[in-house]
Image (cartoon, rainbow, N blue to C red):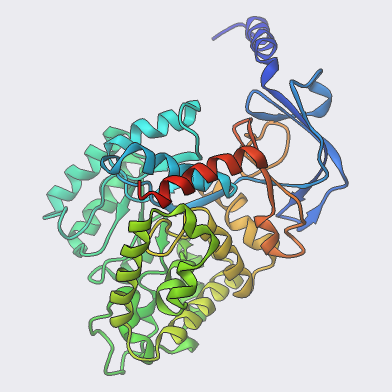
Length: 444
Ligand SMILES: [Zn+2]
């Protein structure tokens, strides 16, 4: 072990050499999402990527004169990083979109080997964007042919260094069990969908980390004596909406709490698909960042999905899901913020703010909604230096003009974003966003 004195000297010399990487916000109000309170205006100091006590800073390399509200950076727990083969600029633009909207951590839910390199480049600051947590390639009915194949695939992904395993539809119970046993043995998280043949009961009995899209719940809302019970559920159980009985929701919420499994609702995505006006979605301001050809693909894809939703059931589907989110929250189940961008009509970054609004409309306070993207994530990942605003916390921060506890829509009033101590003010963010809009309009 290194003698303490030498370690301390090393720390001091490191701090001195990085003095230029220090920054002081002069007059910020810190938003405490756990106590739903806001501090008096105070200075907040950052050095070498961490928050430090203001007295420890000495002379700041940079001073940000401000009177705004600081929240910890947000996380998007069901994000997608485009495949590298689609081109570096699309990948990099997507990452900047997340960051410019205050998202400093993303959990990429469909990884590939190139994303492991990207994770490193994001960590070192070589590529601009949020911190990346990445799954490996998907476990599904096609990629997993047997229990033995499932075990091999779990071992290979753990060895490759992926942060978690992504479960997709089509798994059989034997394969699911092989995944759970092998993953638990290796200590790697498995999260995502619930295959129809696996079902919510087996999942709640497992140690799956998160259930994404509220998958698997819709089937369990159909009473066993209903004629639709056990029939083809369709996309997220949309076929079963007419048979769903809301009185079954509280029991499912209670069982979720008991199982200790988190949910990543991605409700904004489903609302876009099921109920929103397609032309209004395409007319949103943020669409300027989406390549023109992608917008057209999205239009076609959503028309296809709409064709599969039973007549008049879209709005009811949305309402039942909102009740489920409210009940899960009320019962004390963990909700993690996630919107599934850039899936169809889901604009990276922008979608997270829509998702936050939906959580509030489903029964959370603004502080509780912000917790889903900050402290809940830190607890879920067991990373206590994230999602906080105290000395020792990673300096992933969002500076807002307006108080988000008064109105959750104020989470959009972003003056600047800090990622691991690196500061992007509004002007810099707008430059980056305008560049993206230019490429998107040119179809690049
Ligand atoms: Zn997804």
